[in-house]
Image (cartoon, rainbow, N blue to C red; front, side, top):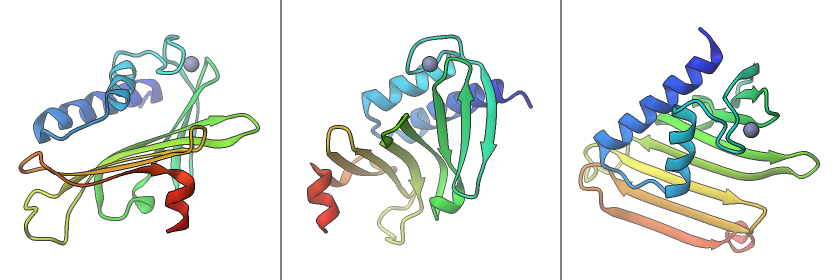
Length: 155
Ligand SMILES: [Zn+2]
């Protein structure tokens, strides 16, 4: 399958999933996926064209013609998390700057019958860490963490 199409189809699927599950997604991440779904690079707005695709046990990496890239975390990295999509923003010479993860997780807690949605952002550039866990059944936020990355790493 054409990788560009595949990426667009996956983004559309993810957006559908959000509608269905009623879970809270950050505006930033929603916009990111909406841009992907409409076939443009979320970083610069150029027409989306995947020129290279690499897969490793940790992630799938799509490289676009405009020079940006998207990494999708594969299942081995996200144990128990279904239908997950992650994004990482890398800048040459800086390594990983930002990593956002959004996905469903079947919870061990029987309270959460439909599982939970996990929204996680690790932002090295702005030293931020955010984690929001939502009960998919009720849409209620069950756990929330907002702190500096330095603070979070000490734990
Ligand atoms: Zn771009």
